[in-house]
Image 1 (cartoon, rainbow, N blue to C red):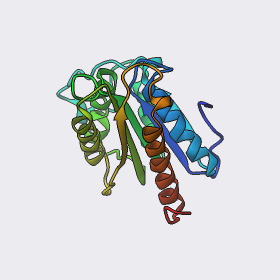
Image 2 (image 1 turned 45 degrees about the vertical axis):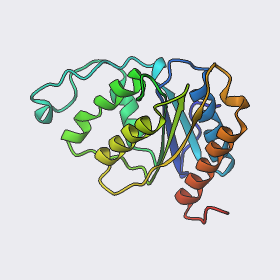
Image 3 (image 1 turned 60 degrees about the vertical axis):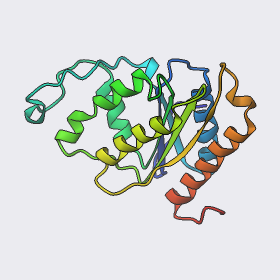
Length: 198
């Protein structure tokens, strides 16, 4: 999957992946979704948080008065790409009944944007969560809460969830792969102003 597609005059979907495994189940499912979106003419970008240095938010009391976040890492450019996208996918494995640590740290870093009333541009959001056994609902709820807080307009996220125990299991879970493809098709239809069956 290409990291960045040419986005001149095209609708852009950015996927942010909170898995430490570049070839893990979550990453694989994001590739499935992005492939489906790209086949429908959308420009796509995949951001693996594990490939970026994102420091934990330090909760600066003066955050709303700062011109920029004082932490020197990769969070700013990643947030800029995510917040500027027309469509957004947030994907995470389930860790301890909730979103992964890297995804939580990244979400916390969006606090600066919230204080400065910088909102997600995404008109459509897809959420992907993969669990060994439990915690899917809690994880999706956490991602939904972030989208609600980070968006000025009301955005109702789509979601696809399923179980995968070992690395590579998602690829063999036909039901889960089909759910991710269906979510991506629905995202593409919404972003292109078409009916979902188009």
